Image (cartoon, rainbow, N blue to C red; front, side, top):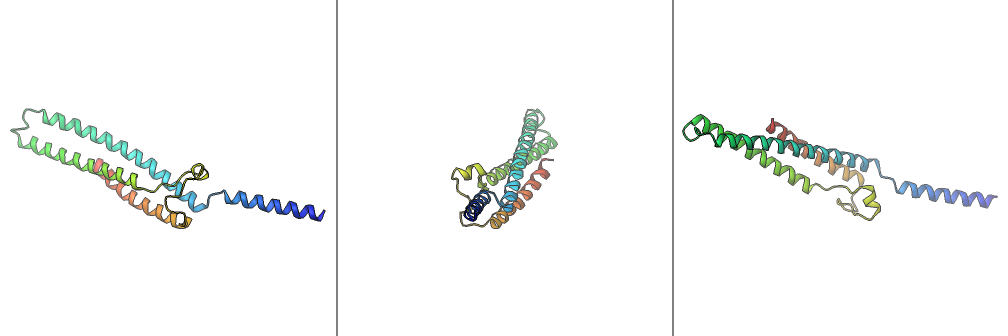
Length: 152
């Protein structure tokens, strides 16, 4: 009976260790949640930028087809202002695309189970990964603020 109890205790301890080893730490869950929120917000921003660029493009087309553009200095100033605004928003769209392509994305738990490597490096601690993701979040929030200001 004593031997059976020891064997049962041993297998229970091993099963508990295996179960705990497969779980993700709280820091990684937070990092993953932050990244998912940034990705969704980035997609929404990209869509908003595209809508605004389409509006400005239509306005530029309308202004450029106006027969008074060449002779009316107010129309010319308006055209230049819209063109500058359009260029500025295009630049921000490019910055958003650059940010998205350079952001280190954590692989999903399924990808990790299938052998995907950690883009932050295998020796980086979970706390350091969370700090890096939070630093990305700060950069993203700054970019988001500039974009929202510009497209309004």
